[in-house]
Length: 263
Ligand SMILES: Nc1ncnc2c1ncn2[C@@H]1O[C@H](COP(=O)(O)OP(=O)(O)OP(=O)(O)O)[C@@H](O)[C@H]1O
Image 1 (tube, rainbow, N blue to C red):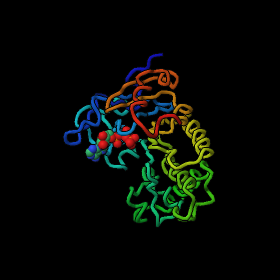
Image 2: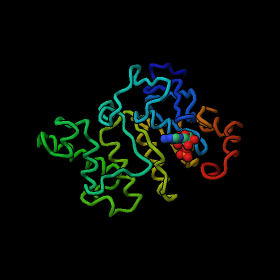
Image 3: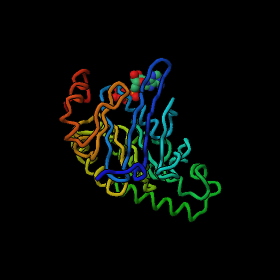
């Protein structure tokens, strides 16, 4: 069945990004459906991170338009995105090192706080009921990712794989409509990647997921739809099988040495 533009959650059209004389993205289009996993792949320097930064609102494109649920995109500040129902993870963990795991996840729940985002950090203007609700919600998110027993620890005292689960719990604490995952498999062992694959498929039952990832095995296992970038342009798009069989994709990867190829 063909999906119309209004049925898409997020639509990017003609996205061009220039850094000085370098064109990192050149007229890129992408449509994210309200369910399923959309993968964004390509060799090193293809423009994946740049596109991810445009989709997550932190980078303004030189040209092109973004549409969120058929209308203008939410504001560019993190709490605008959070309130619209868009959450993201980072390549680095971006956890607050001096806050407990639970407080880190509570901080991800700002769109639910009646006192506003700052109140979550300062505690000012926040109702006690708010605080209780948010903590219960954060704990439930930690439970969902199997790390509730770490709630009162500092992130830096935990193994990397556990910290990644905390970062996922923080991104998911508000039940986002769109979850943007930036290389979530980075630094994980084989078993942890298997666990991550199962979690992404489970999340995708009620959340649209966009996944930027070098780990080809994970991408091919979890994505419903894949967009392939090379030199800032879309060179292929389709199901995992279609993309895998596309000679343009093989050529793009063979043309570059290093990661992202045969895994
Ligand atoms: N802030 C910047 N200033 C100048 N050039 C940039 C900047 N960010 C990215 N680039 C360039 O834009 C191009 C696309 O980079 P980008 O990081 O988006 O690619 P990528 O596909 O994510 O690569 P990788 O897989 O290596 O992370 C590259 O040539 C890169 O050097």
